[in-house]
Length: 196
Image (cartoon, rainbow, N blue to C red; front, side, top):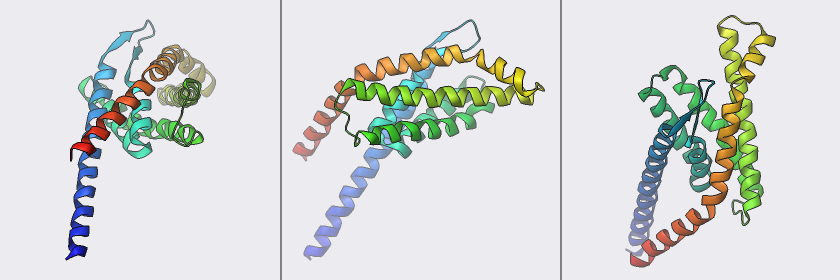
């Protein structure tokens, strides 16, 4: 009888964790969509947005797979809603790659960064990965339309200033909000466990 009660408690705990995970993935997906909708157009045709900051925060709070999935789905939904459907699969892939870099850097600090400079290291490394992915994607697009490699690479580089602005904005936002959000979520989940 005690074994059945123990198994039931474990199953209930697992179900609560699965439900919480799904809710958090959905939340960060929605935040990524909204963060990408809030955009400032640039003369190059690109735009500055908050989606990359949400990607980094989702990986820091949910881990690699859940965080990258949430952000990738958010970017894909944004693309489907705004006429960029052909780019949706790429942004899921990019979210996984950039998320892997973010999580690797996060792991350097034992997944418990204590200082703002540590968050900045994670954000800068993640930003470098984003810049590389953007350059590769834009170069490939130019190659597909018929340019040779040299001009394709240079043309792709003209779109990097928007990504650089997004990277800087992401580093600033995440370094300012990570610790207050971490404290708030810790408090929220601790209160939830006390009340059960």
